[in-house]
Image (cartoon, rainbow, N blue to C red; front, side, top):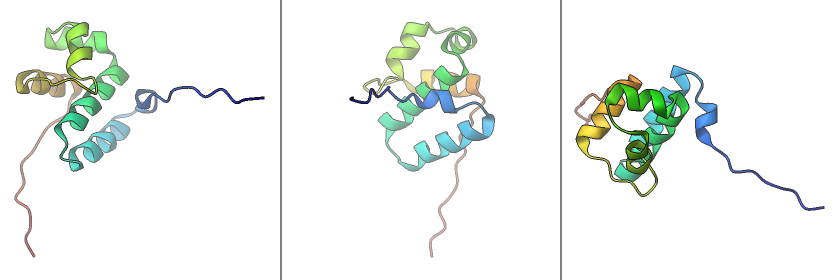
Length: 97
């Protein structure tokens, strides 16, 4: 008998702020803008896309499209979603050995 596999949704495992912080920290370490945008979309789904849409004034459809694997959100949209999610960016100067 063949095993039936289901699709894994990482949003289901992001139940705490600590899990979300770790997930986003790993995404930022990739320096891949597309992956980071997709990761923000995963976090938004975990928190509730309708809630994020209400907080940002953007439609759910726009959020799903912008933060999909092939999406390309504007900086304004990205910052709005990050603010709604409680995620902040900070700048640091790398230590050179």
